[in-house]
Image 1 (cartoon, one colour):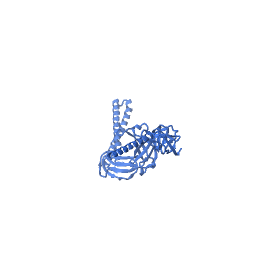
Image 2: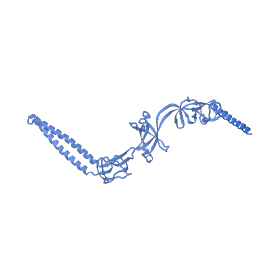
Image 3: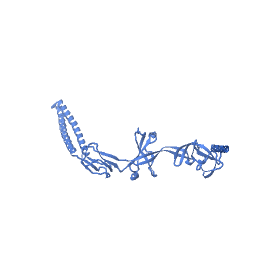
Image 4: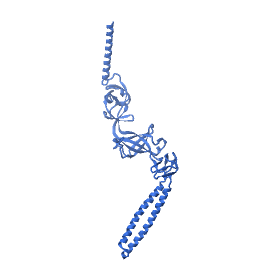
Length: 365
């Protein structure tokens, strides 16, 4: 009994082994032997079109006008005219600093300037009189030279005094901090009564009249990106697209990231709450164009263990053709090598074909 059971086990194992060998043989011959059942496919032809090579990047929206307003003179804050979120107009007074010391300094500087100006005018008249008397020998040449030297000295002092007046007037003007452009107050850092030094931040202001996008590109594309180049952009998560052009390129490449930045000004109709500063934006830039390239639908391209192939159809038989794909774009793919462009190729159903398979056309050209 035990011997019979062993015999049956050996027979079953042998049958299983033969089945596996037969299956493997069928799989190995599948790429070269015609199939008994025709595969239903649609047929088409490659196209010849200009294929753009596109670089896709993600950038950030920034406010075109943004400034942190800092104190240019030291003093105590006497007035703060705005709060966070307030809209402001260009030239509007925002912060006032105590100006009494600066007003006194201006008065003193102007007084000294006027005094030197009067002395210079008197000395000039004296020099002119001495120059008139010298030919008559009523004055000596040394006396004339001394008068000339004195006039020159007064002239230098007068110019220095005028510079002091200019600086004093500028310091007085700087006690009134005004909006450099129209916008909205983003933050307020001081209050009335605070004593601030030069460089102390007072307010931050963002403009409302313009926004732009900063797009980072790898340094390998430095020769391919230029001002005026067309850019197709859309907000992340949105299908709405619009076109703009590069308006400015950064002169340096970042050592840390290996990128350079292109600036694209947003069209005026995109300046709204949906395009807020800080938001991300996606952009496509055409780097180059491959003219008259061979293009097929992506359905025709099949990935096999040996690489990508396309099945060329002739007389009802599909023949496997190794190809090298290029750019993938909107459901189509560029074929760099392997097709001439005049072949009839399998489209839908191509993935079920093998080399030499019979086909049944159910649609297409």
